[in-house]
Amino acid sequence: MAIRLPAGQRRSFTTLSVLHTLARRGPRRLTELTASEQVTQSAITQIVTKLERDGLVRREPDPSDGRGVLVRITEAGAAVVDGRRAERQARLAELAGRLTPAERTAIAAALPALARLVELDQGRTVQ
Image 1 (cartoon, rainbow, N blue to C red):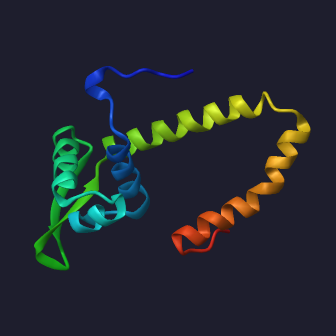
Image 2: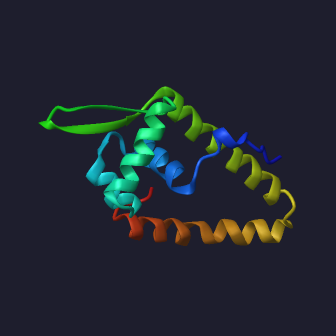
């Protein structure tokens, strides 16, 4: 099931994380991306420049600060995120199909606690 992309289309974990952050949280300033991705300003600038060159993000003026710039995911970037999500879901479904009913029940019982961990980490409520 794994699809191997040509070398020119492979993305680093941090690059994919930037795309996922923008898809999930909307446009961000470079300083916000630096903090969320825990990389240097130089590194995030290089990542965003490459993503922009590849048509996956675009920079636009920050309406709240004329000197600032926001990075926004494009439709092509959102398609990359959606494609990766679909691949992960398909892979998890395939793996879950190999589990016994008791193992699947145990995982289902643990999901509320796992969702709570995510909630605590991100400072929000999971419904």
